[in-house]
Image (tube, rainbow, N blue to C red; front, top):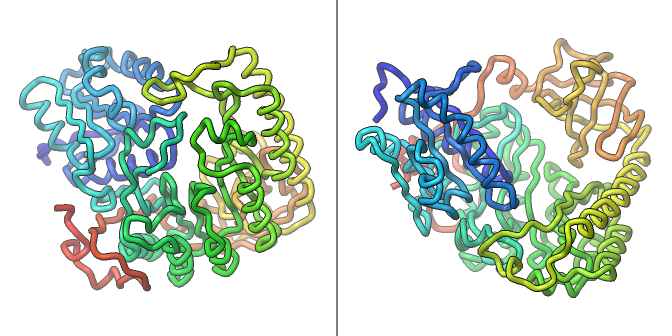
Length: 499
């Protein structure tokens, strides 16, 4: 283990999706338990960990550029260590050490808990350690987590993915779907709520397929309803569901569980049935639109967002127009739009019909223009309405200049507001305020009339005190539903030690 008399400082740099963000919280928890301390200043840490993403085409360039910049720092401090983990590490394996021989450890998506041991081995042997497992050595939830937010937390319901989308490299890097038992998910959610966390996001590569491993296709809807029984939990979100697995009981659970937010992020990818088939997306445009219709029937004010890929191999102008048609009919609150990125190792990378960059860019620009128009129109309809905001940290880049604060509405929309009016002392991240929307833009809302109500929260108290939740690992067991066990009566051993 690390010498406790001279603690080593560490920094984790994260790229990619919410799953990676949450994995980085696990890595921080594992390192702190091993005796490392978080680097609090601007100095380069004794240990720098890169948690990488392999989804985009420039992911490796970004990693090697950052590794190159650290080479000089390592020359000046020979005791410094560099570790590379995540999806790109799982994909490239020994190639990372070949291209950047100053890296000390390379570890994959399946062995997060091995990092402290690998670091010690590299230090002792004075050579790089590369450990890439093909399957989980332990479920990530059995690892401790050092949470980044005092008011909002990620909770994994599953890892891996059973889909075979032709553009996606994730299943080969994260493996087949593995589900956590419901009791363990609820225990972790309850533990966060007991520490003042107001908002939890349930995470899964295909979150609404949850339960397939233990034979209950309605498990995710039940899980949402059970979250409604957790005291102190005010907002529940989830990402990302797959249209193929979307069942009506999930819509009912969303509409009938008060703390489940009226927000749905559901990837479309394309509005062309021909492209969806080529992508191996096992639904068609009308199926997708039917889900959107049912969600809006149950929750008229729900904000529905999506992911769309432009320029998939073989996409014609007719295919692209079909995507624009679905966007017009679905009227998404916002969309994450991507130009198709060729990833070696995926079926799509070998497909005929790879499109010229200029064609993809032109279509991408048209899609952005259309979605911005729709987003602005939707946001303008909210002018004059009152919203409850969870005051956020770091959401408004211009807040220092505009003297505004920022928060998220229950439907996930970002609102920049004037921090004046009926406030109960200082507004802290994690507090809740009510305000009225005065202006709209495509990607945010403005509330210039001040605060009507302000509720101070335990999350705000903890943010002010510089405290962040640190959850112990939660073990595995037989699937069950019900209220989580009282965390105050359980020892760490009872929660699971990860063995």
